[in-house]
Image (cartoon, rainbow, N blue to C red):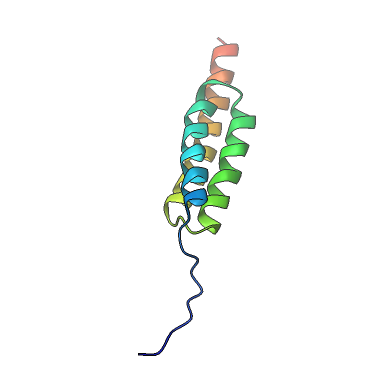
Length: 81
């Protein structure tokens, strides 16, 4: 059996930690500083995906972006009421 080189990176524990933190920041972004926590969660989700935690890292990045949007809309609704 020949060794076939693979282009996919193996999942590391650092990738999983980045992904979990991205999901946590997605939830926190809804309630506190949505732009800051949403951006940090987005970056951590992308880093987790690039380090090998696919597709969960991409889901975390998307959740962070969605959490930031929901947080901004919620803050605008509260401030304008």
